[in-house]
Length: 247
Image (cartoon, rainbow, N blue to C red):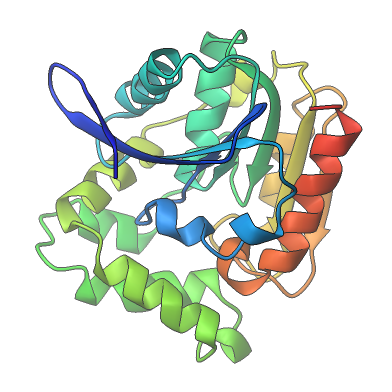
């Protein structure tokens, strides 16, 4: 994985294809691999950037995304953010509208209530193991918790550094973009999962209502990680949005 060296850290990233930029920002506890099933279903002709932004305060995560796009010379990107990635996407769009021409905010909100798993992570967890069960219970409907998608989520979460997870959890709990997100007017698609208890559809819809002209669509039968449990439907939503805004 290529890396961008910064004075205080290295940012890993992956790129695929060539053309107008599309940035995929992962949810808390995940890296670029969560998008693996979605990539082959997206149309050709885009430069897909998948940053590996882990840990840190929210302001620092936004600055990391900004630094990476600047370093790669990317302007006018469509930024797709899931979970904490959606918060980063909102912060980036408010700060650097020259970098962002469209947003897809999925299973995220302008303000996400903390969960017990987040608080546990912030009290010195040294192993992801005890955190994974509560995460899966909120991210998937009961009938889907033994699915292949849930098994993949468990494996990807197990590979996460618990310190990074804890830092990301603290960043999310301390973030309230309600006022700043309400200033955005750029093309925006907002996606919620009908079975998501982390960012329930009504919470996601509330965030969609902050952005003038935002299009909110619910993904039936999907939870907090559509990249894993509904990659084809997610790819269809992304493809349609890219086409509608002429990206």
